[in-house]
Length: 575
Image 1 (cartoon, rainbow, N blue to C red):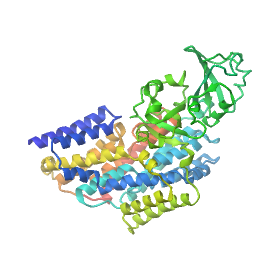
Image 2 (spheres, one colour; image 1 turned 180 degrees about the horizontal axis):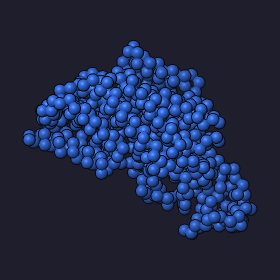
Image 3 (cartoon, rainbow, N blue to C red; image 1 turned 90 degrees about the vertical axis):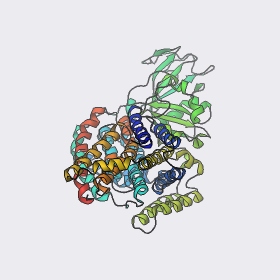
Image 4 (spheres, rainbow, N blue to C red; image 1 turned 120 degrees about the vertical axis):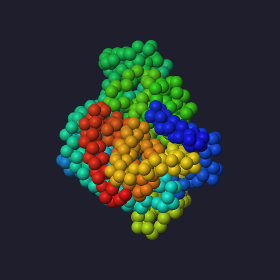
């Protein structure tokens, strides 16, 4: 085997192995692969520049940025208010329909984030009966169009690099519609397996807020009852930390002492009530940012603060934000906020500083859920421009009136000139991780061709002319991509499996589209693991689910999903 082929295969194998072992660091792994390819001279300078400026990849980046304009409007929030009604079945179908539709044209993480709070706090139904269907519906919706999910656009960018052609806007729609109807039906009947979890005060509004009694406070020397700390609206004093000792439950007759840390549980929107007590200090309030800029985020699995305490992370220096409150899976977070060890999926409420918007590491560490700083909201004619411009651009692209890439460039320019988006917002929310992963995967695919690996694999598969081997290979490609999606990430699975599937198709001498579509649909089929897809992680915490809940509902959905894809891909995309 030539040296170039050996080195390319070694880098490819190490990339896959590293993703399995180090699941939380795909950006670092793909970045290492890219540097290795360049260092060993396996790709040219022109090929490197071509990978980072791939038209399909640039289209994906522009689509993510332009959709920020819609996130800043009240459109989805107004719809969310109309979804929940007394009848569960009616609520379920409204939720499923709205989520599926908007997820076909918008970032499904933003759709789920918008609907989380109304569902979690609704007075008619258990949130646990609706949140998991919300996540699955957003995944189904993503399979309907080319722009419905990042995996579709990633596959398209690599398809364009390999063939010079692009998938059409509606390439996924026929199979996607079948998936929405059939998998949605299975999901509806499987909702009986979802738990009935009562949203108690500690779980539905279970943010834990740490406030310190400073010297000279009017609270000192008085009891909890005497200070009125038991009569706050939607806030409850659950424990006191005194000289490293925990007092819980807190007696009404407990006397407040200097240096006490009062741990409240409740509705984060009511936190400003604590400002009425002289000498009761929240860190964020001390730094002057509590009253205006509250932002709710979810800690990503790959965040650098996972496994560390707030005290040891240097949180303010990293993000120019202070943690006001924390919530975790409905379980009580005990002790001082600074001593709590952060886990992936934790909900944090941040009081952000002036430089928060310019930090490029926010999106790498957190999913922004709600409460974005007030100045970032748009209304009036700007909101109409953001919504109308986006819908018009997508419609024109779908009808072939304008190229999607060109339309998005014009839309982005309009949003910037109109003040709907700012350069700081674009920098902060720029999807650099997706750019690096996809461009590295494209470059790796190019290296496989340069080194002759693709030719060798093609000659190997060319020996098998039996049509049954072709369909068996399609099944294996689907299963391998699905497993990588559940255990690694959906974007990494799509990026890595594309060159393999493309090589297998060319080796058999058949059309590549069946294998390409199998990869695209399999990379979106994460239903069993709460960690395989961002929306699953979000509802996993918000609904207080267990992993077993995902398995009970997700397994039958996954089976039906796989059967439909493997049955209809050869029908709509013949070999």
